[in-house]
Amino acid sequence: MKRIEAIIRPEKLDAVRSALEKAGCGGLMISEIEGHGKQKGVVQQWRGEKYRVEILPKLKIEIVVKDTDVERITKTIIDNVKTGEIGDGKIFISNIENAIRIRTGEKGEIAI
Image: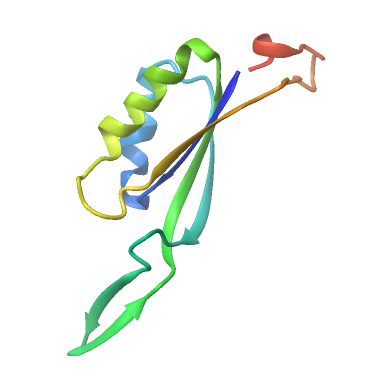
């Protein structure tokens, strides 16, 4: 099992959620986060004054999937959030040792 963590632009949430549902993604978690990558924020202008916003709002999507589903799910995310501009986000993939469904006690892939 793998955990896929995708950091995305907030405005891409609806598109990626719909696409993940169509791709057969069983469940996901979404968290509102703030941060910055290499660009260290953006310069914006308001009423003629420029100011720097260093911490930007982002969303983190977390999904636990079977090893065989990783490529399909990551491709679905990329296809639906990529703009080609700085700030599109990142995807992190890590191993999950075990999963337990609390209600039934099921363990392993069947629990996801």
